[in-house]
Every structure is written in C-alpha cells, then in structure tokens.
Image 1 (cartoon, rainbow, N blue to C red):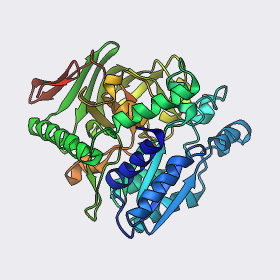
Image 2 (cartoon, helix red, strand yellow):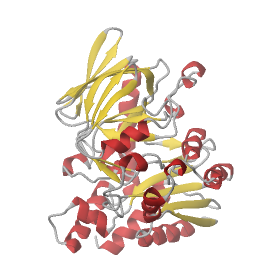
Image 3 (tube, rainbow, N blue to C red):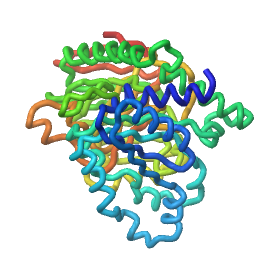
Image 4 (spheres, one colour):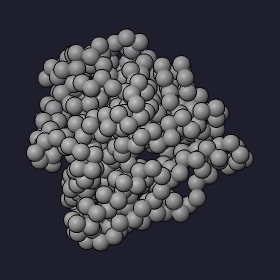
Length: 399
C-alpha cells in the first residue's frame, strides 16, 4: 500500500470507526505543525461522510519550550480559561473529536528543567477528562506518522526508509491491510468484549503483578467494571477512543495500591522521554518515583494535585494484538500502551465504575498519565474471595 493510499485509508478509519463522525456533526481536530497531510485527509473524509464543519486546533510545542525557558515559573500552571471552555462547548454541541498522537519534535525539550516541564500540562486541559466522563462527544486518538517521529523509532535507518517503515507499521497495527479495516476492528473488539465479560464474572477484588522489578498489588472497588475500547456517547453513538486499541481496563480503588513496579517501556510525556522508570506505592500513593532519565518531570506531575500520585486506571493487554509482536518502542503512549499492560496515575474513568458509592470514590486529578508495565515475563493474577486466579501468563489469557 503506497503512502498516499495509507493516508486516505487511515483518515477513513479515523472518521468512520474511531470518532464515527455522524452526518451534520461538527468535527474538532487537535494537531501539531507537521501533521497537515493527515489533518487534510481527515477533513476530506469527514465532509464526505456528512460533517457540517471541521474545526482545527493546532498546538506548537516550540511555544511550550519558549514558555519553559523564559516565562516566570510561577505562571507555568496558568491555563487560559477559553481553552477549557472550548472543550466544554464541544461537549455541549455534541461534537466529534480527533486528536493526533506521535511526537513531531521528540528532542525539542532536551536541556529544559524537567520540574518546569512538569508544571505545564498544555495542550491537555482538565475539561478534557470531564467531557470524556460526561460522554458528550464521540472521540478518538490516532497516530500520525511524521519523518521526525520515524527517525526516533528507527534511528538505524535512512530517514526516507524510516518514514516508509513507520507508515507500514502503523498501517499494520491499524489493520489497514485488511480488506475491510472497520469490520476487522469490530471483530477484535468483539474478542476484547468477551474477555471483559469473563473478568467481570470473576468478581475480582485485586490484581497482582509479578515480574522483573515488579511486585505490585492493585485493589479494585466492588463497583469496578471491565471495559474495552468500545465506547458510546450519552446519545448512543458508538466510537473507539483509541485507534489502535488492544486493552481491557478498569478503574481501581485509589487507596489500595501497594508494592513496587518497573516500567517495561520508555514513556514520552510533556516533551520528555522517561526511561528506566521505577515507582513504589504505599497506601495507594506513589511515594517514590525514580528513573534513569527524565524522572523529574513525572515527579513534578505527581505533585500537581492530591490525586496525581494515585492510580486512576489499570489495563491488561495480551499478545494477540498487532503492536506487541513488532517488539518496537514507539515513544508514543497510544501505541506503547496498547502493546503492554499498563497503569495510569491520575484521573479515573467513570464509565468503568458502577454504583453511586464507588463513583464518588474515583480518583480525581488534572492528569492521566499511563505507563507500561507489561511483558511476557510479567504474570498477572486476580484475587477473588481469598483465592488466586491466573489471568495472564507469557502474555496469554488464562481465563
């Protein structure tokens, strides 16, 4: 499949399956400089499928760098109110939303104080999480290949060859090589839905993760519910919040995480690559955060509010998806989190909890930061009624 064909196919998948843009609906796209070809292809696909208007918001990370370097540090947590108001307005007008992932300037923040970078959350705003929990928009996050991202992932290749390689990889993991990518994804989500139902039936009280550098127990609430990447708005519009998506996840008890965990993949957050991440939890809180590189940024983010050091998500990923078998670090949370089991510091998801009592206990935070802890060497065990149930061994479901 040639690059131009891949571009069109990816745009179609994002519009038809990911965001599932409806006739007469407004589509809001969040992007960065350097991603224009895919943005334009998405706009064309959206209008072909009946969108009323396509609105584009562009965030330039060079401005984020300038702010970290020269602004008064006391102002770095300031967010112009109209940015959040715009997100809330998208919900009020029942818009569709598309965000494009993949670093465009992966080395731009080199040398910047990580403590400063951790204080500036933009382009993320707290209202974004609120709209997700209110289910007022059909939305998706999808990868956008760029030459600079390709060079980060495949440094051993010639730049043009690397760009071709990342396009082929994304076409593969997004199932663009299938005769009908949308049908292929519906079949995969049917499988993941069945896994979620099996986990539900176990009535798990906790999860135990054991592997190299990891011995972690994550408590679940009675109302914790297992879901996969098949969402629906309050108006009944189905959509896939991640393209690609390979996870089943739930919202854990924010007070019952104990032990230590070692990340199995680098994390790219706030423009910083974090490697060798190690976190210790006590009483639900991350009490120690260390890393070989970039740890200061996550430390700063974990102090942002009372819930930033507690878990808001725990997700399990098997090796039947297409991302993990590539054995590639993409330095992009969307792809890397769907290659391996992961946990997330910060805000929990209401859609993965039932019952007023437990809904009131969901972790609250301005952040939601996933980091990958899964591998074939990691065993995941469920705890239910004092009994242990093997869930994942060697990346394979045991249920």
